[in-house]
Length: 181
Image (cartoon, rainbow, N blue to C red; front, side):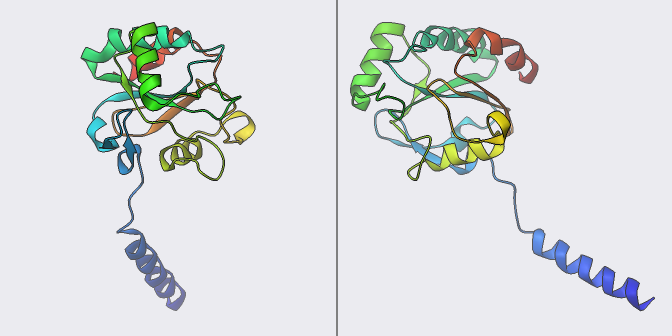
């Protein structure tokens, strides 16, 4: 009887300590858009998101076209693509944020939301990408981003559902997006 009492007391203490903690989601982060304005990711609550680290001088750069097509196809159903330029892979995104914005709009008519250049790996990894990688590790649970155009699919509640490698074409993600819409 006394052992059960100790156990219940211990359980009550543990539950009370955990009562105030909340699961993190992407909505807990702030980022800068391509124009330098601070944006709370909570602005995207209720949307299905595809978060992509992008680059303008990469063999995968033509994926901008497929990303824009996904955005156009599903945006009225609550889907958005979010592009985060990164220069960490063979300096394939060397320009300024304004040069990147101009390139994306002129070359691929990108209308989805673009953000300021970020680090996706290393000691200066932006907090959002630390979170994305923690939630969906890569090959053999190694969380490092291997290359440009790695994609993270996020549901309407801010949960990171799936990670896709660079070689995964945007059109190949369409079915997974439809399931979340």
